[in-house]
Amino acid sequence: MLKVKETFFVGNTCYRAGSEVADTDPVVKGRELLFVRTVADKPAAHVVEQATASPGATRSVKRPASKPTKPTAARK
Image (tube, rainbow, N blue to C red; front, side, top):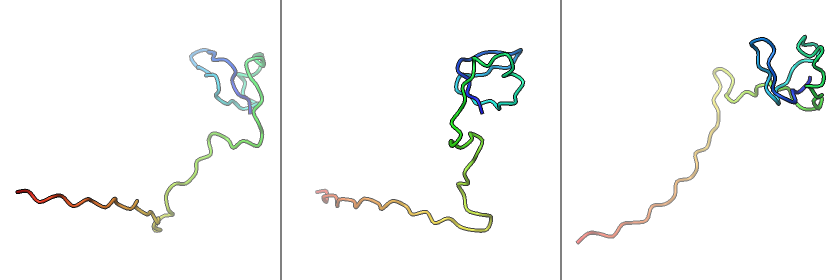
């Protein structure tokens, strides 16, 4: 993977600084100075973690403890 160093356009496509492009992408050819190699041990940006339980399963979510309310003085 390569990371774009400076924002640039190719036709109608904008490649923003910081976005990642595959090494084999044709946009890289002839524009190698606009890219820098990314760290290999970093997870890819397209990896999505599952935030919900499996279908049919329930999640255990605890609600924060409510603050005790102060008793109000009786009105006269």
